[in-house]
Length: 407
Image (cartoon, rainbow, N blue to C red; front, side, top):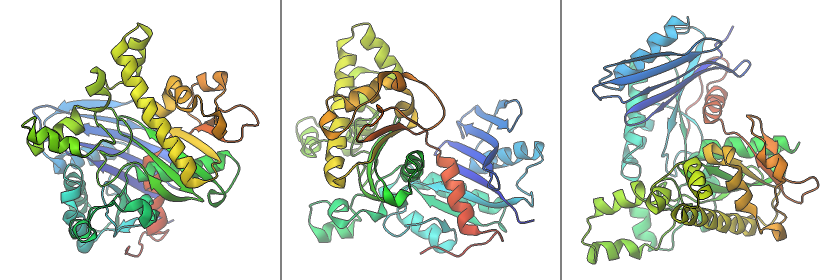
């Protein structure tokens, strides 16, 4: 029997998230996280299918040690990295630039291109590379597949992807809008079509991925035609700690008048802005609690967040021309009924509304929250980026365990 299992690795700068999935039935055989890699005390949590979670703390000096620890936990379940049932390892890679439009079997040329993209993804691609190289060392015989956050957005037309700056300068420095959260937008747009009982190519969807990082996309017939994030994940919506859209002249002003360095401004806009900069909290649950207690600073932060969100919904209605559904996903999108209600309030002229009772229901399944007969469906669609990575990886390597290289 051909191997059917895929190990999905998401390597961050100090963490490794992982899932082991069996693609014969879509079951999750194990889920885990290694965090605080390189710190004095690291932590691993591993949950096998149908079993109790196992946790331990100790020294995990680097990603090689982290993956060896993951392999050891999987081996305890009889599902180690040496298992003949393992078809491939799928890696989340944040930035693939223009070159990588599809999942790609990793070779030296692919690694070199991911490395060349480090200047436009300095926080993410180095960690992704470390995870890939460590996994290759542990299983050099196994197909390793890169699934890129940017790939889903490579279908954007040049009119959406280009910034209006000097073309030669832009091309020389790879400056364009790439978009991120692509695996989530791909999964949710297809799942929304399924919820409506239609094929993806027959549906136009606005996907709102609202977590600590947040992005919107306009998806026409299964293909992304616009998205809110740009060269980096800083552009677009108000996020937990990121500013989103802003007049770029603010940066010059802070340099000239505020005496701030480029690194200080980078930290300000990425780590001390957004909701946390506006009110000191980036947890929507805490912000809503403060609003209920009459906190005006929290209320203003919420209103700014919603105002930006509405602007993108309206803009993408214009981009798509016809909208069949708006889908909320990720931590805030899936769990905050007040955000969903406020985001579409007053947009009845665009065919958008939520049913109060349906919106208040919590659940793990994709569901409609718009009134019966609504012109535009409003949905809550839990994202599953790991399943998307596993699905793309398994489709590429094929049943015989090998696939062709990407472009």
